[in-house]
Image (cartoon, rainbow, N blue to C red; front, side):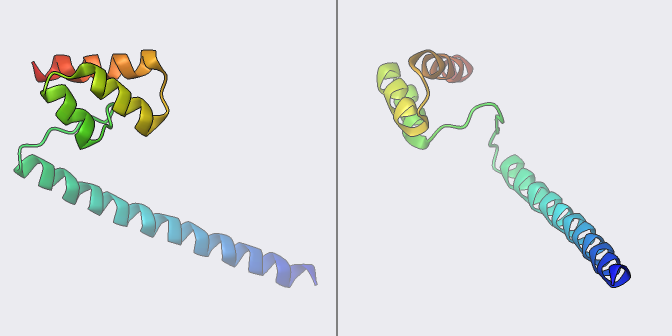
Length: 94
């Protein structure tokens, strides 16, 4: 009775392993496609900063306080963190 259960568990693990490998392969293909699209359109992606278009627009218009408020509303970040993020984005755009 233990042998069939052991075989089923091993087969399940093998299936799971191949499924994970296939998923990783597909994810790498998608990442490469996105990187190519960003590069071809002249878009620089900063992995450390994820903000909405509203926040970026406020920063571009010079409305840092609005950008900080929007960032806090969207992310739940504290005042200090939001201020640092907005200042970092603002410094990069200058």
